[in-house]
Image (tube, rainbow, N blue to C red):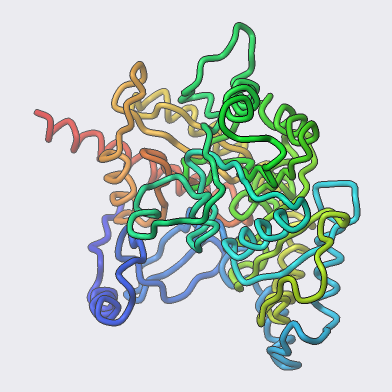
Length: 444
């Protein structure tokens, strides 16, 4: 298997220039400098080819530069690029109608469009406070909802996101996420761990510190992203929906990374048979064009004119890209995500048998996590090994990203073929083998 000497001279030159003029806050894992891409394949500025199993953090849902998306962008750009949200344009309405059609609730849906996931979450927070007249929110440990002030207050996956920015937004309480692989709370006999977490909210939070009638919303990722691609235990969302209904609390789901067909359904929350009140959307919705959407039940989005707004909301080029993206996903890529995702999960389970450093393989569709551990009994996170695997895979032509303490996320474009999956899995297992041997040699 070919070893790439990276970064090449052209990439190195770009990185050096970047260091001089770009904020050092961006978390660059390794020096990949992109030149162009097509589908799942990408090339760097030195001509090296890679398979992209990160998709720009689950953004390039239809693959890089899909011809249908490119054509939609070009056609709209020739008409007009911007008009502002002070006026109207047809493609904005068309996209809103389509989003309402595929909404994960039966009630009519209304949208507010933004430029990113964090803006969509901020919109949801403002809307929830306005609609309920309440001030408090509940979030989850391990969550990632963005880096602007309200969103970053809900984010609880790494302390670096909070350090230096206190005081954060008031009114947020965090509870454990129902991770069945790493439970924190003690369950009653026969109790689903998700039900345990909800019982903790009811008995401990509402019973001791936080009045339920002060809580505007519970904000949760159906599958945690940055926290480790963690799938909650099956009883969680039904119990959480019942809790919200009991106390008049809005259930706000952050589908920024998990939505738009990635898990084999339009929305990851649909796997758990509950209907949310507000949905935060971004990343894969427009194949890489900046677009975020806050989707709410019609009776919830009841704020008056001027209560919230923005300059670029409903940007026509992003809306055009989104409509092309949805069309492609609806006509095949969502089914492909479910089918190829199942194929990859089966293959990873076989790889797991050969590699005791893999503690768990989990996922739905093409949102898959591989968690590495020092020991399967203690489940101690193997952070250094995970990082070594990511780096080694890069040098063999596979782009991946870590998440959680010791998980590698697999989130390729939804157009991934079985042949591409096989090639990537071969590189991944080879990288695991090489990294395990390096760890063993270092320990010796």
